Length: 145
Image (cartoon, rainbow, N blue to C red; front, side, top):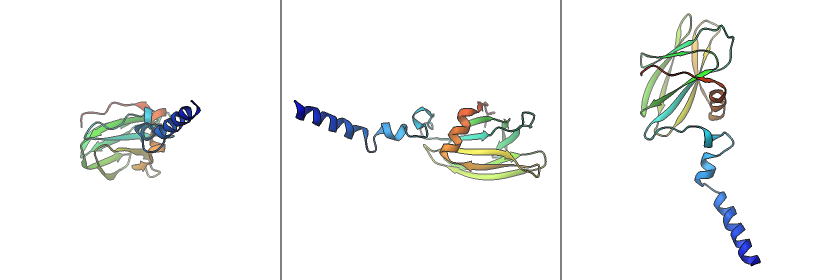
């Protein structure tokens, strides 16, 4: 009886370690509760951190088509087919461009923020930083893209 209990405990422990689906989707960054990309697509989140409440939205375009404006403490999720995309963030004075290539199953985060010169920029964030901002932000529905 004692040997069978020990074998059961060892098998249970082995099942919870390694590269199981449980570990892959439930890591310290909260992947288990964070939406993954749609099949064959990439999930790209455009996020904006907290700033002054009266700050104007940062307008974003995707391949010259408007996607929408991000007010402070908000995010948009775009489901994209794998390929190269041209994103632009528009401030009150100018815009900045960021070229991004996405792959199927990928989840990426771009931070939209104003610059001191009156422009706006897009910066890539880590998974941990991006998820943190998405969780504390308000979802904004993107325009058709």
